[in-house]
Length: 354
Image (cartoon, rainbow, N blue to C red; front, side):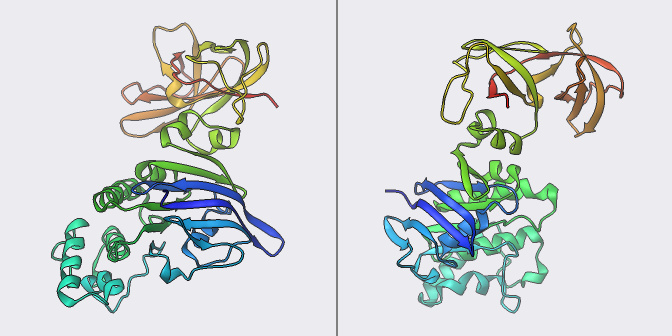
């Protein structure tokens, strides 16, 4: 049995459909993420799961029990869901211990104190029970909010853009810490974010959404290396498309040479193979284009972004088209310089040319 099941969920605001037939299954103990741009319907879908909004079609089930349909809706407080909000929503007049204990007030005092102590230890805030929210950093407040959501041992934890108020350089690290906490607690969780790095740092499965639809539900590895359609390929990661032609079932010829795939090359989201001789657009990720001084194939450096250990180069090919290349930063080349490159792509990602 799945912890969470969404069956053809539809939600509308007036005549505008914001969630359009979403299906997904989340097993117990797994962490998943709904990833997509602003306005794609991911937060609305999360609110429907939480019970904050009715649905216009489909069914939502938690542990097999129906909690939302057109005919009925179980109240949010009866769904056994823990919620972590974008702004943490901590009670400023309560100290950390009392914030965490808020949802377990019905427990005997000893059991409540033991659970609070257990959670303070779990989230690494031992000794902070008497502190107030304004005395904590953003990352510490995030962990208090998570501990409060976990306190009643919910069946499902929902996290709505939980890292958006943190500094950019903190987000991925805190996301990894939150994942560890959820895994140690054995929690099932669903995160909403527009940031792919947060999604990859936290999730076992990622669902990419666009215009109210779920475009792909898969592992982070497959979302990046085996995108089902052009939107997913464009939205996740960086890369550039080059025109090519399919010379046989496993080979594509492009400006930079011949790319050989381990399996027959798929060209559409329904799994159809590329047509032999057909024109395709081939996606090259920055790690597919390798800097090689010994190569006779040359490209001009037109942009560079220093990233510490690496430099992301934008390179102009002979045709005028551009590709990206991620290069160790000790290979520091000037704008306008010609450098040697070669292909080293493990995954061939191609789509039929429009």
